[in-house]
Length: 442
Ligand code: GDP
Image 1 (spheres, protein in one colour):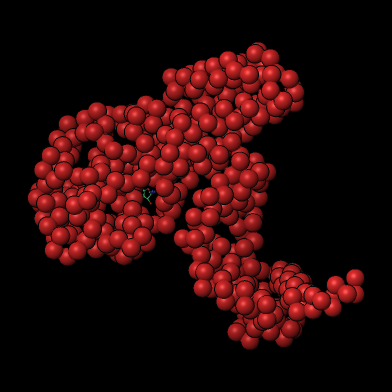
Image 2 (image 1 turned 90 degrees about the horizontal axis):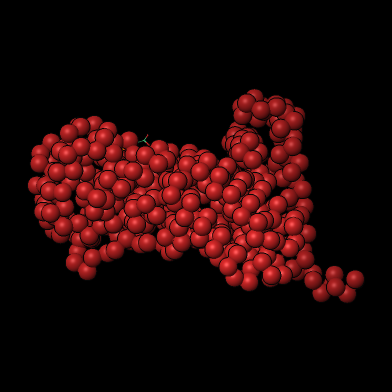
């Protein structure tokens, strides 16, 4: 999970501050030395870390923070605000053009996740009711065109390609095609190289000059840390970019690129990639990210995810079933699937305030494994068994355990838990109807 080490070290530094009650200037300076080290260990750019600590220190010792009733809390608040402004103060949205279509040019080095994120963006816009067109401008590798077609299909967005022609011509043709067929967004997947070279930059500049994209988004791989930041600086100097998509944040335990890229390039992170699946894309909100780093959770993103992923019609149906006490194992399975659609358990839990640091990766993985086990047990039951677990006798239990690769004890545990759940639901159900009676009896 991103920022793990940084979060742990910051919370240790703040714990020491909190334990002190009154703070002196040197307490703050000691804590800030720890913060600086923590930032450097998270692979934050050296100058960025130095400036950050200087800014926090100046605010913390120069005002009436130290004489306040909760000095440690005030210092943490300042760190929160400065982290937020370091990453860009607010969410930077995609600028839509008043002229249709809006043209988004994706660029980046090979392997950064450019093609995947072109498709993720297409899917993101589709969910908002837009009609994106993906364009294969990476003409050097036939495999790249194929890959875009594969992910485009998954995203439900058409892909425009002309094989291995001139990328400028392809882009222009694609834009007129988009106008003819009512696509309001065109996403150009341009060529990537292993390193920045003049030829690549020349080609990108040509496309920019001829097509006039409304947004040039640079895709960088957060796992490459400060290299990614340097790539961003070079692309911005040579081509001029509008924003960054920071990919593979799910696998980056340090988070240095996320914290440095804005300060070094002056360009905002607009989206982050949180996994290989097309839904693993989040708009980047600096305040929410700061909150996650400081272990304060990110309930707002969790709500966004729930709204995006959960099927509310099914939730209503479930609520009705709960009320009528007809919730069966099939319904439980469906609810679990819905929760899992929101992402890995560890990622979901880390967005809850206070959970980060309390539940380790290992525990999250255990939880995930348990969820999977319950799913496979239910999947090994017949329809009748799912609807009426009472019929599951010892021989059925043995069959279910064998089918799901589990033990009879595991099947028993699930049935017991489900039975308790049903009893609880019965109580809730009867509380609604017989409230008056119960109250009188009390
Ligand atoms: P391109 O060469 O820049 O077009 O990169 P690709 O889109 O082909 O991505 C390279 C690899 O990174 C693929 O295996 C992707 O599945 C993987 N990838 C892309 N984005 C993410 C992400 O956000 N998280 C993770 N874990 N993997 C990613």
